Image (tube, rainbow, N blue to C red; front, top):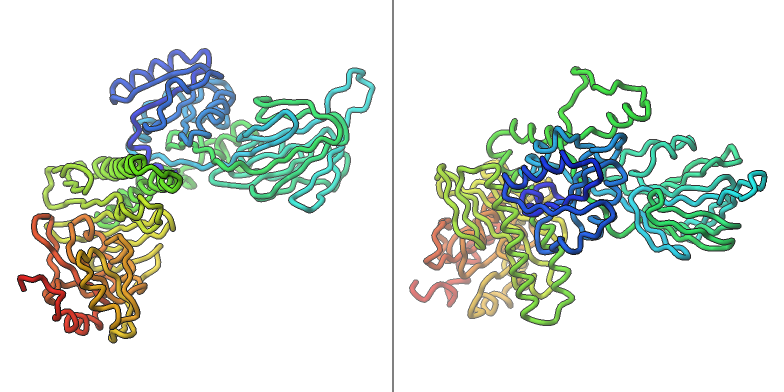
Length: 570
């Protein structure tokens, strides 16, 4: 999950542990001041009565790690990001201290926080079907008679391969977020948990010197077969059962990740284990000469230290990627719906969510700039030199029919001329960027147009072509005319060499502001249908045709267009 997405938060749900009244009062004051709705529930209570899946929600836990784990159990299945505030005594997971609460929330609401995607673990066993973020513990059941046998034997399989027999007090299957202490007790590694999607098998009090922890992928299916009675616990007992001999436990990485919000006010991982586990290769406080600004502060500082154009490109990129997340989520729903009205509602919601994310991010970073979006009223700032031109969902028809050819388009216009372009393709993760005078890139790699100059060797793309004239006129003369349904993507595919020319009968500024920069910087020639240089305009009243090519093909295109393609007024 992209941290920029948190800028649109309009609801907080707090899970509150006992003895957190003072911190809760501060949280309530902050939400009142920012006009954000706050709902609270006690630890262990259901949030179903207050949670609205159609609102941008941030989960907050007030307590220690136990409360944080309850939050994960509640928020992760709903894909709600979670911020942990430590009002307990010992916490590895809830790392924002109460005195930093307001500052951490301000940073989050500005879209400056980060979101760590934490691997979860799923277990299926007799009497248990549960998900956790820490670990699954399989241990011996203490005998009634203290002199009876105190060990257990467990057969472990990884997919179809037999790992072996573990003999001792049991074993743990843990995520990188799980107990570092348990791993260390078995001479295992310290796992840095940030975006670390692995699982670890940790033997407990093994009776063999050669047994060591094993790291596997989250897709690995671990099967654990008990040779006698055993106790199974998930996340310290949030799910628990007693197993009999020959019972089978199946453990895998969970499908859903937990989204943990991290701010520059957090007590960071290596600081936490230094303070709490005696990590002795550094002090709790990092010496100034070795200190790097951390996480959100570092990224924010790097953004501020860049030149205006480079920083603006970073902001636009982060906004586009953040907007792509709800588009992907809602696109999946569209594919499974048959009713036209329901599909229309989802498409409208997709447009709205993506537009709100982008415009909020831009307004946070550049409050004096104008914002011109297809989906919302034009917003004017005090600095009229700069206008952000946004199409939050270019290719709406494709989106509505489950087609992946849609994009997010963000352009920055200076004094009427596009200078920055960002086009993001949520379904493929492709990112096209361009800076006027500096170049164009796909996923960071430079791109350029083709050099073909013959129509019969060229692939063409048609945008809006109401009478089919371009298609009928060029289809036989070329290697094909394709229609993708997204003007922004059309220009990016021209720029990256996936097509040799593009035709748009009519354009709007939000369709092409970003793509124009990318295509031109990749070497494309952009004209109107008569071959005159294309003039970008923020006005939307008059028809504005666009012909783009790799440059060398342009004369052949214009020559062939003379017969029936130009506007009837020409």
